[in-house]
Length: 117
View 1 (cartoon, rainbow, N blue to C red):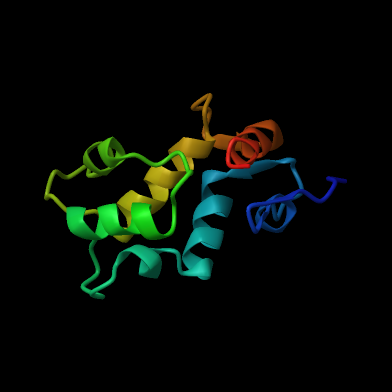
View 2: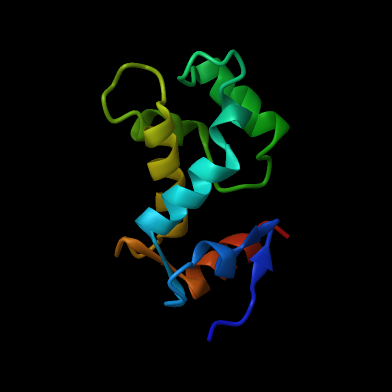
């Protein structure tokens, strides 16, 4: 059984619902949508994130996190100059999944959050 790990207000074990000691993309996205993280960024509630909203969100909420202005362009997979909820969620998943194996291992989760301290 996994040992509880809470970092930055995010509880690894709560997200890892199958207790595999890895967070799958599906587990991450399910939690991400349930927590309503998109609303932090989508300030005008139009269902998409403009570059202005992105930069404001970085400044107001995510200073010190691994997000950069360059992420906005790379996560906009359909090149429409906006981030959809799905694009943002998948982009944030890639920050944790540093070995690109499609899962967030506990060590990746802990390394990301230890860099924030």
